[in-house]
Length: 60
Image (tube, rainbow, N blue to C red; front, top):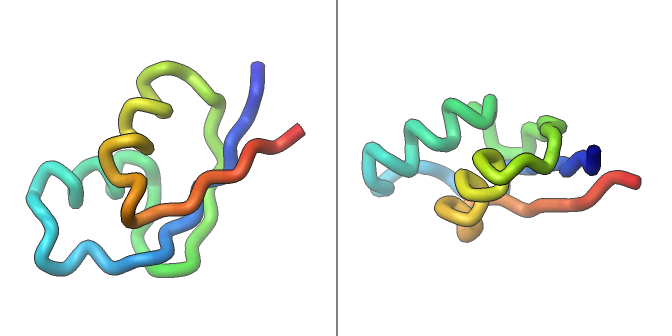
């Protein structure tokens, strides 16, 4: 299964509660923090909802 690296690049201040909870569920708390996840449909869906706050990189 493919893996992705997700990095938080913008703050969640003045964002909706839904977007804040998505960031928490991805494991992102601080700006600059990086987490790795499997590229499942649920993870990719969460990333697409907060794509303006994170950067995504595929790991090979």
